Length: 252
Image (cartoon, rainbow, N blue to C red; front, side, top):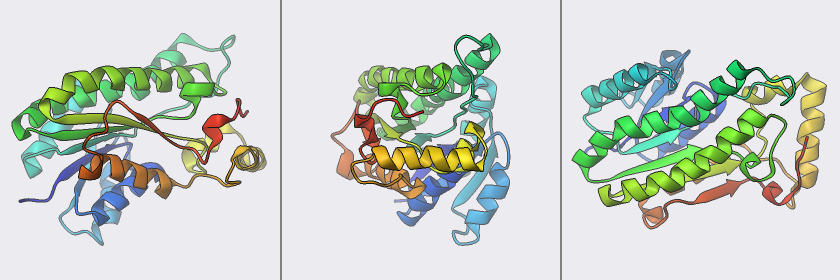
């Protein structure tokens, strides 16, 4: 049997490359999809994993781009076993001052993009008779966060996944969400300057029963578990990888 293939969106970012690195270590071939730097990120990983990494420029909010990306992965490796919806944006705004364009862009990338990726993988899963979906959500789907559009998109991701797992189940496909808390990555640098980020991280660590922050590799291991046969009977679930901060009130 040929090695399974995983598609990771947002693959050029810190979280995407952490997920890809863990999956490569578990024997997957990995296609990194990203609007920017996908090929560069794939080249870096390919140094240790020759022939098992593919970089594909793709905008998950554009259906034509999604279709073309999946077609390229299929043409290269002939299958997609696993989809990791990791692409996301989190523009900072208040409800009062929020622009409609900002709201729509966030939902287009974080929610509609995940749906489009699933949609265009379905024919491959039908052909294969199996598949896995893990979407990267956030603890804010429960308690809200500093931006309404991001919180709404992550709550919507949980709802979409619960609905999708019913449609995908007869195809032998599971669909789940991994919901991290704050992770110190460049993605979260938009929240403020370095001092603000350190203070913000400290508040998360203080709110954790473990007294710690989540690392990208923690999220990656949870994703890998839900993609594995060990999780074959788990679908429609949201797994919090939040060091217990999903139990805390809003942390701002």
